[in-house]
Image (cartoon, rainbow, N blue to C red; front, side, top):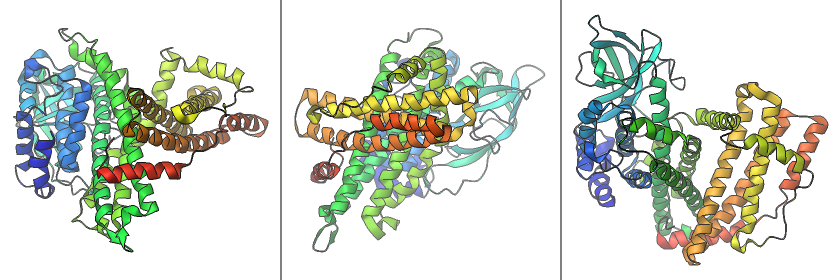
Length: 556
């Protein structure tokens, strides 16, 4: 993978950015010949059927080729191919997956419309069955479709008879399919983004994907899987930015020495590395869980695609968490990379300028981060109501423990026992706030988006802290080498800082929901649960920065 990206993609990044005719399709075809397009596709359709962790690794490595190529690659292998993999008939899979696996056909996903973005089910595109019953006649317009200008195949959506939201496979060469002009975008300029127009397009009834009226099942499951993969792409982009920033800081001399020797620059490098470590821990933790549940799916079953989609649903909360966290963290890392470059970071000739622009789209596609924050809490509460998660009973138990709950101040943090207790109390604090919200608003909680946003941020921080902690503990158990010691330092810093953020979210949420004696009682309980002595993050960040500067890249 690295040889392909470094040898084939990186040398032509500028030509990709300029949309050189045929360049991206030719690169995708080369990637197909090397097997990089077919990680998720079964062997009988020309794929490799690799495990999900390996699939994520491919996404991460492909991000080294820049945001534009990653957008094209990710759209093709993800939302451009997965709908057919999961919901296609055997005939549809044989006809299309075999060509998508090699790059003979390039895939795109046409869901968004001018009046249906986050509210995707509000589609205005219509589909009417022809009088002879052989075709659906599609009319409508899709907007902001990645790969539109190079795609041979669109997974798209329309309402049959204006009511039944349904998914269709539409080939580019079908009569009546046309494209708008290329969008002039802020970033990922080398990827094709156009509107797609359907004018009396005759789509064979055999090209209905899934069942008529159940396009929402296709759309939502595919978006979940897109979120699953997006985190890995963000991770790859963040590692690139860290490497560029570190290399520049080592060679840029000011006041007689390289700027990497200055404390505030080292602090930035360390924090960028910490964010990468936490992202990596979350992405591959979720990948491992997903790979494990995929092993339980009978690959010989006729409805194997639906079974795989159901398996994905098990971790769609984690997928949304990773989507939000990783897209915002790559933004942070890209911004700091520009800052380390100073004025040069604002110049087009430096990769960090392009990376800064490219990363911004990650917070918008695959469902905006606002939508995903709402989904995280909605899915948690639904599972709690169905007793799939014991959140409500845990919140009730916590209520009876509040008066006696106190952190153990005597813990020894050499084995990260302090951080383990802080994560445990972070969960309790989140339960306290979530229980208060559910009790106050009940079914009307959905209308309190600001509260949901804070709750979601608390859940995200808990998952982030715990993912980094579990990984560091596992690393320490294997070996007490320098790498494990640096990982331990990163967890100490991240948990220390994230705990403060979580406490602040809790205060804001509780203050918005209660007042008077009730609020004072809740804040008193919160104060008792947050009495931890902070760690010396300066010394820890210096140690982390030293390791990154020595390696010249993210080395963990």
